Image (cartoon, rainbow, N blue to C red; front, top):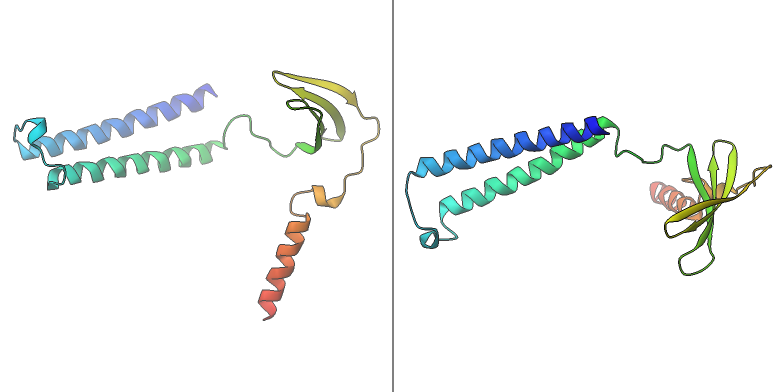
Length: 152
C-alpha cells in the first residue's frame, strides 16, 4: 500500500514538473512582460496554455489509471473469494447480509459503524444460479436477444 502511494506520488510529481517546465518555456519564449489584466483570454498564447494544461491533466489521469491497472487495482477490492449472496433491510440503517467466504457462509448484521457475525451456517444454503455473475434473468434475456440478432 505504501509502495503504491509512493509510486503515484512520484509519478504525479514528475508529471507536474514536466508540465511546469513546458509552461515556463512557453512563457519565456514570448519574452514579454505584460500585466495580467492586459492579456486577452482568447489570444493565441492563452489558448496554447489552456490546451497544454488540458493535455497535461488528461495525461495525468490516463497515467494514473495505467499505473493502477499495472499494480492490480485498488487495495481492498474483492478478489472473488468473498461474495455477497443476499441481504435484507431490517430498518432504515440496519441490514442482515449473507456472505460466502470460500465454502463457509456467514450471516452478518450490518449497522452504521458496526458489523457483527450473527451466525455461521453449518450447511451452506444452496443459491440459485441466478445469483451467480452472468447467470441472471437479464443476462439470459440479453444473450437471447443477441442470438436473435445474429440469425436475422
